[in-house]
Image (cartoon, rainbow over all chains, first blue to last red; front, side, top):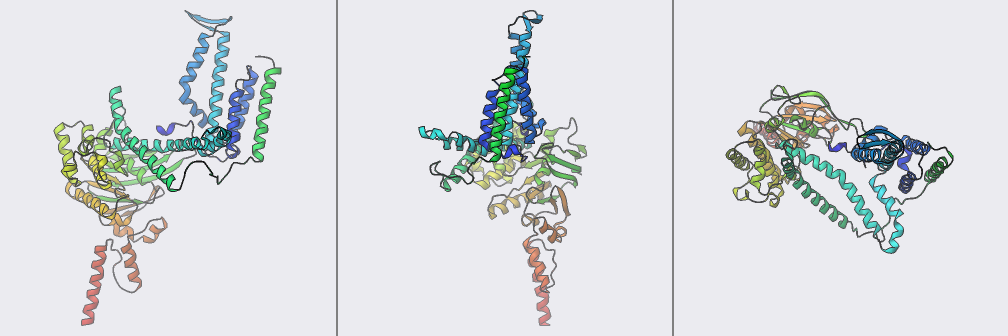
Length: 270
Length: 289
């Protein structure tokens, strides 16, 4: 059941999107998120949707797999849509039950808000599907490199991030193993009231914490044994360099932004 | 007939990029009272297979029977099954969590809702069986040495009085002395309680001395299944799948090549020694005559 979490997981398919420089993917994602707030018409959603669909096709990550990631935010989505639906004031009343009323403006707003959120989540999850955690932190480190001037420990923060990300699957696997080991000793996590179930977590949490500390200690020791002492004077085996396909990606991004602004301005409002 | 697997297959991560078939159409019969060695290279499916034996994993296709009942059928008592088929995972010391050794061993029997007296008796009994001395009963399990921790963890499963005991690499990471101690104790438990024991390992050397049946797994299927002597005659094929027969098998084959007629099916150093001594006695007698 733990393995079902798909959001923020890498999906290797070796596509062109996977091989892009992580910096362009980061910039692209930020631009994409910002672009969601640049338009207010149906045409904008159409262009964004087509753009996202094109990128998903190019990334060769199955659509089914990406959509699965939406499951974890479904509650948030429902809340946003229903609040917008019922609480938007407007002139054209469609339905009225007691004090609850749905207006045409509210309906339009709710649908657009829902669409916007879905596109936002799908777009940003696509980045983690196509970029390994290590590439991602490399990219962040380079993009934020200018902060070193004001003594922000960019490298250290990036290193902490990549270690934290690296530990997620390890700890998930460990949890799975410990759960099974305790189940083999007759532990029961599924039945009983809330207090009983919380108590049943102790045999999982204690070994999990101990193993997390042990792993962290081992890792610190291994890093020190290889003379790690922070980012100063440290070079990379594979330094990030923009290549032809990255320039192409920048162009695609620019065309997308121009298209968004164009349709929002010159096409009739729907 | 205690455990029976009928055409069991298991696929990890079905429908994703990580899809991998871990078990391929396995049919296996494990009768009561056998001491079995389950051998295979890393990733051959051993660990997946044993988790099917106590219902922790459900086969993608096929059926697993325990005493004639399908263990994944609706309404089958999984908790009772897990007390009957005890599974000791790899590095079992990582599952310890209680404040004292005794309390940790009591966790299993307590989950079976036994009366307190019975729970305590079983815990004492299990700890004695794995050779933990009484002065350690009230110590924190985290203060013990690696070998002691592992024995406490094994006691935690033994305290449930299983009919089938499965151990996944119980000797991993132990020194030779700790390894022999644990394996000797397991053999003793097998003899005294007359339970089925399945010992998972990647080392033929470890298990050859103890078991009366070896099952060799390769790439999710069963490559060989039989008495150690019979399995080791395939030592060339075993090498091809990344395993090896015990060193004595090689010594005996080499002796044969040097025209010294010794039987090549010795599996332990003790048997090999006897075989060579017999041959030597023969030669000596011939020379004297």
